Length: 355
Image (tube, rainbow, N blue to C red; front, side, top):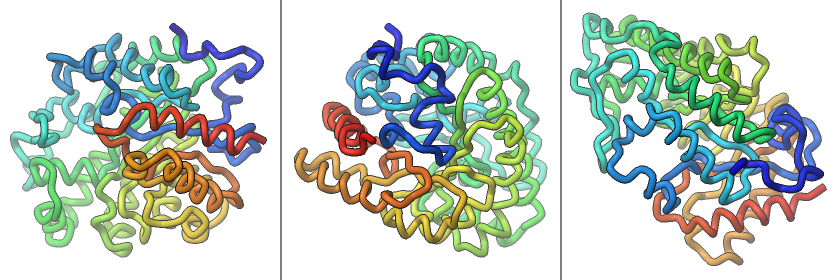
């Protein structure tokens, strides 16, 4: 079943004309577009069914399975954009880094990068390394029609954090020790990761992705000065590498209220905002010339429908004066979220903001 089974009169003729891409470009929209981070999977029973017995990384390498999972929330919720189903460590796995995604833990790296010799693990990524991505996006764009597909990648800092720590961390002591104690090695690590990340995004764009999002999930652990000196140059290299394609570039991190202007300066067209900063204040921090994305607290979805609608109105009211706004959660969909609450939220935003 195509993702565009709604009446044709209500559909844009191509992704370029969609409400999502118009909002990213800060153009007038028929309604505020909605999509959710981690909408592909997690909370959906149909996702859990098709993933039965299949590991996460293997799931990301099966084009038909990726296609099905990516389409599921578009069919169920009527969101304005699909996001490619993958994981931020996929390009690292593709170039031969010995890692796995362990259930209940996350990515675990067999040989963490702690010395200059360890950088040898990171070779350049080629399109042939991720041919399954090209195949899956080809399948997806045919199914999605005028619904845009968002490609994505992990930002250099977040990838470096996993590689240096060897897995998830709350304190990033090893990564920060390298950043402060061996800034030359740190800069070379992030520069190499920037090249890999840029290559991964280029593959997705050339295969048909209409926008890309760079997830710097853990950048909120950094002070602004450290971010500017030690992280921004690598993120800027990624954004600059894909600038010529003309697709919107979204930048998102968690707990990044103090970094919003810098994240925009890195080269984003759209800055993602978590739930800690109201969108009108975020717009002041980011400055003009950028659209914003966000930012309903994901836990609100566990409250009553009336409470969800009230909090949603707060978000929409704070976004009323923005040049461009893409409605999203302030982080990803939580696994135990009721899928029907997401469907109702999409309908509410569409109805409440209809122009």
